[in-house]
Amino acid sequence: MSKTDSKTPTLIDVAKLAQVSVSTASKALNGRSDVSEATRSRVVAAADQLSFVPNTLAKSLLTGRTGTVGLITHDLEGRFSIPLLMGAEDAFGLNKVSVLLCDARGDAIRERYHLGVLMERRVDGLIIVGARPDTRPSLGDIQVPVVYAYAPSDDPDDCSIVSDNVGAGRIGVEHLLASGRRSIAILGGDVTYGASEERSRGAIARLAEEGLSPVGGAALFGTWSEDWGRAAMRTVLTQHPQVDGVLCGNDQIARGALDSLRDEGRSVPRDVAVVGHDNWAILATGARPALTSIDMNLEDIGRRAAHRLAEAMEGRPSHGVEYLPPRLVVRNSSLA
Image 1 (cartoon, rainbow, N blue to C red):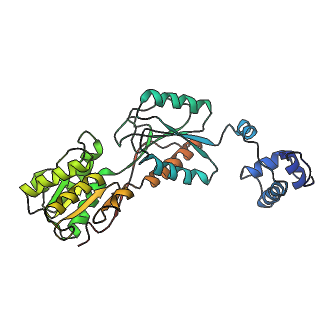
Image 2 (image 1 turned 120 degrees about the vertical axis):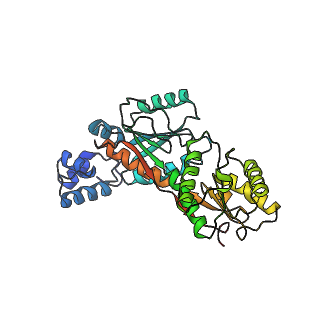
Image 3 (image 1 turned 90 degrees about the vertical axis):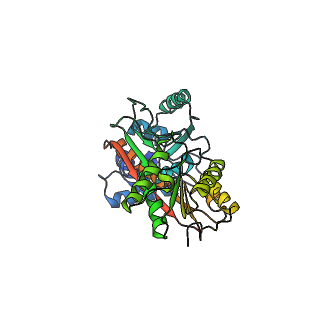
């Protein structure tokens, strides 16, 4: 075929140039293991020479796969879903799988609508991202494999990938203890969030291992806001002026706590060390001082969800909840 030939090259042309059958050419381009490396190289070289682009529709009819998966998120702001999507795309990119993103906006009816649309598009699998890291209803019997990320399914037979919130509380306290803090306050978020209770539970358990209790004897719970962080920190300083460490349920609460500490003339971290949660860069790096924070490793959750979904699509499904460890990102708010 000449370079001036306007005819779009086909798999037949590739097979003819590589001197193999059409079936062998297809197997070679699809990475099948029953083709020798020498033959595969010859077919790939022929496809490159002809600038051959596979017909996705024809390929899907032959393989039963469309090379697409759906990701339905309930995270309105994208704070959690975007890193998850990036991680999933990184993992699927190795296998040339595209991710179709749909925002259900916290609405079960909209979720069902997007589910129907994705099924009509014949996606090969689904990743479901919850609005909050609490157990959510299972989608039930779906025709394609499903993996739940960030928020676990309530069906133990489903596959769910989540962050270890109990472990997050533990590593936050571990860091404060290692920096010499012994009078540690815990400022949690909304107590109706399972993650808020779990982070506080992990923190209290780690304190107990040292024979300690949180300042005031228990965690304080409120909202996921800077206002709550300011108010809670003022209360702690008034009632327990000996406080020298603060573990916060998220970075917004921590920012509020930093404000109150500054207003009361307490030096951070010399007098009081502060640790947040989420490692939301725009908040953590812009704080005064820059905020030490616990990162949920959302991209890792997305990658693991993609790997588990790929395995399920190959007939090797996983079951139950898989907890991925968070990591501590140390900045000036806790460095003595």
